[in-house]
Image (cartoon, rainbow, N blue to C red; front, side):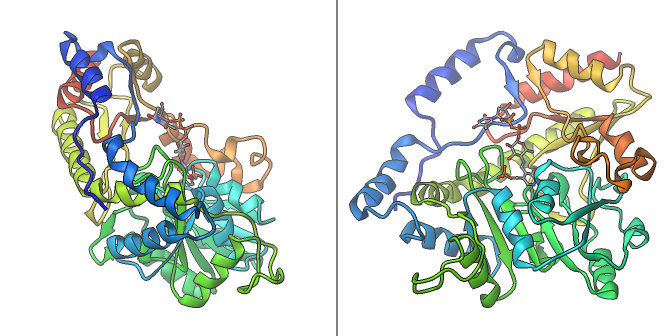
Length: 396
Ligand code: T4K
């Protein structure tokens, strides 16, 4: 396959040229993220190959190649591709054979908890750590009952959970651990990929993610037998010879066109991660001296993926979080207040006893303070400086 040139297409060049001509970066809307795309022409040979084979889905060669390429890139042994991260999560929980209650975080995208309801499992919300914004392991044991079968933590914003503490608790109580690693593509702790932790870890390859296949996702598991079961579950539960149906599976397959795009994207992912790292550094340096602005850092991260750039707006800042958010939006800078509202506050979750505000004080405080600032590979440094200037100016 040809190597994609991450140069700009004629269309991108024309929009970039007009953007450069603007006197002020804030004139064009800047969103929380934007996918990095290779040149359109670089995708054509992949399409030609698909057209030639007439294999469009059901585990064709693009699918097989992407599974192998991702295993090699991520340093994991067993990975099964999915049509999206939500379906991967639902299937991982199903493959784990869980029942009863599962401990999870209220501070995530709603897909995390929805995957439990799709499996008839009861979510039990536990508060988050104020530094990592991930499940606080010191609060997990108090939430375990005789019905608890698993823990579903999230490496929120790609920052690692306290995996050692969670593993110790799970071992003590005989619980499974399924990590929602939707944000954690390419993130590593000192021992390697975050995806090696837990019984399984799931990824999202949505357009807004660090690595994208337009829509897509994956389950990383520990052994060949589990991978075979997952592959069967994502293909309706069909038997290997296709003559009968052995499991109540779903259609979770990733098509050849999505897999092909993944192969192309993977070639540019290191460059994309490096560009994110530089933007992250620039934000941190520029925001460092501003009272009341706190940049979240991963704890014990060896390699961060800079999937998000969350800041907390504290009381010492001159404006409230919402006033700062509106101030940025007025200058066409559209951050996001991920993850407000908390999952525990949504209609289908607020009735659970663990969803009470009293049980989740840290999550409630953080969610009132957070703004995820724009970060994506093609975000130019002048715009980053403009955003920093807006925040500094608002504080004055
Ligand atoms: N677990 C966790 C922890 C997750 O965060 C997610 C998904 C999942 C599981 C489930 O994975 P998937 O089933 O989605 O694979 C987005 C994404 O839709 C969602 O994937 C993601 N998490 C969540 C955190 O964010 P929205 O509603 O914020 O997306 P949207 O459409 O407002 O996009 C944000 C910005 O990105 C837009 O303002 C513009 C830009 N954008 C977006 C798209 C879709 C583009 O430039 N191009 C695009 O194609 O949910």
